[in-house]
Image 1: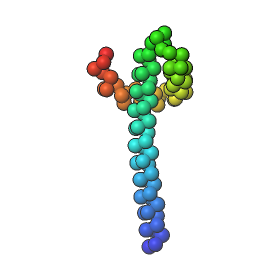
Image 2 (image 1 turned 180 degrees about the vertical axis):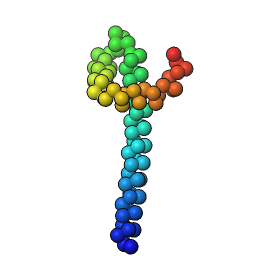
Image 3 (image 1 turned 45 degrees about the vertical axis):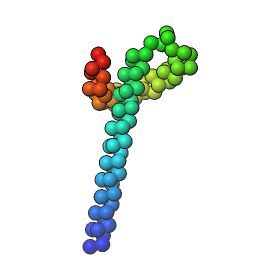
Image 4 (image 1 turned 60 degrees about the vertical axis):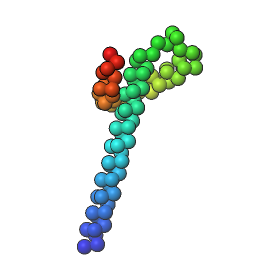
Length: 85
């Protein structure tokens, strides 16, 4: 019996950890999606040099994401930017 209770506690802890990780993933997708839209709409010809460099770093970071992850991120924020099109 104690082994079963211990196992149930482990399963419960793992479930909670998975929920935390999934919530964090959703937040990261929001940030990545918004960043991708932001970078796509920048006009580098009018940015100060420091801002342009930061945009390049952000762009390179976004380009390193797996395509599927970036698609998920863009789909997640798409409704928020639909009015601005």
